Image (cartoon, rainbow, N blue to C red):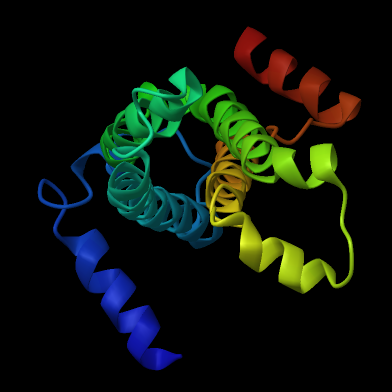
Length: 187
């Protein structure tokens, strides 16, 4: 745990370096808000890398069927755009406001991909073992779930970022202190 804390403090200490965009984000004062903001940045970096891995994976499979099925273009186009967005949003608070939208789009891409990859199962029906039927499809059934899972990570990052931005309310002075301060200024 001490190593993680030291590593985090060293990265945050760069200031104008790695965490420049992070430092400009409005977060609540105190180390708790800074830790949450740092975790959001790490989630976004991870999601960006995963989107690029999904892009390579979907491109290698979908190159064979791009001319046959127009829906095959969706992950090939969406994954690199989402990956670039995540890496840019890791360092820009202005871009983080669209995390929820991109997260829901990733879930939709994952759900649509799962539907298209399992459509034949529902059309033909399953005779015998479900595992055998999934193996005989020839398509990776759970690969599109990577998009949906990454979309959930983006929604989590959006939610954590909103929690970190909540500014603490100033303390309210009791009424008797307000009058005494007013009277002090008057005299």
